[in-house]
Length: 62
Image (cartoon, rainbow, N blue to C red):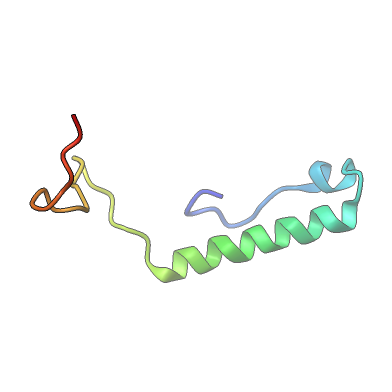
């Protein structure tokens, strides 16, 4: 799910599934998970990569 979407169109995915009830439940859980992630506060977009691990104390692999 992309941030900013207002709805999820899934009629064909549910209608053609082997178990439509289970597929609808799975989509419902996915939408709830997306909302929870959004409410948790995703990271701000950046133009360049920023390491999350400090360089000092990192293991050196050769």
